[in-house]
Length: 166
Length: 283
Image (cartoon, rainbow over all chains, first blue to last red; front, side, top):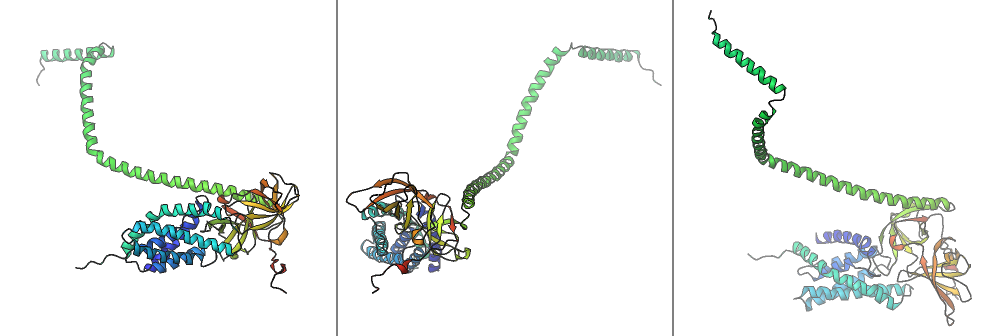
């Protein structure tokens, strides 16, 4: 049920990402809705499908990108690993953990993408990458982090209801 | 048989005379002041009563009217939204028709090529990649390497194909490299995409004379693109004595952020020259 819901959700999100979000860049940076959902999902209590959702998100993103297959999967897996670590450290402040995980996750995914492009023989100006892609993408992701976290929190409460002892 | 009394006749006669007299006076207009005095209070009273009656009547029947009006209002609002949607759809159709008409004109002018039109349906999710996805694929005869254009100029080439969709690498992608020629001077150069989304001319000979406004076109060298497709115009030229080559920034003819409908040249077969490039591993 949770996996099927994840497939449907990522199917919708990747369409929104590739059609709308990618067409609204800030300089050359864009928000990464899939990464935000993967991170927000991994931060929720009682959620046991974070790694599965991460794989699904990575697969969908890889399908819609010309980057070498696996770049997004690797990036998102690292994001979930970092998020799980952060959750243990700052479990009392989930919003802070979400912002921190978004910050680190954005850096990780963009760094892996950048390395993949360098390895494919494309030369890029480092300063332009930082100024035009990295910083704007960070800003957009941080702006969207809290709303995405709230939505995923509601979704997890619906999918994983609290069991009350009678 | 009872004979009527003569006084009774007199009374009737007087009444008839009076009636005739009143009628005569009324017809002559002599009773108007009198009728005003009598009728005006009656009219006023009747108006007052009619107003009260209508007020009471409207008070009783108003709930029905409000419901009816609300229903009518809702129906009109629904009709209004439907018409607004129709207007937007028609405007989109007009824009699309204008775009298609321009592309058809382009096709008529360039009869040497065969074209397939496709719509841009999405963009690459990575900010490092300048690619778009189109709604035509191998089922429509598209193959990897086919050039993609609009009526304004070169867009890119097909990088990957599935049955129903294809991925197009834009010329402003950092991985794109095209052999070009400057129309005016005939100088050859290489056009490279940038991470910023701009395009730049590299490998221009130091002795070549190029100026802002020069038209840049595909040269056909390398076999990846047909010759003489417009790419853009030279904006600025950077020439340093210490460098081997000059560089120039180009204003592309195509607005890559507004791509909607594109044409694929289907009768052009790109030439794969990679086996001819000498490899360092070969003895």
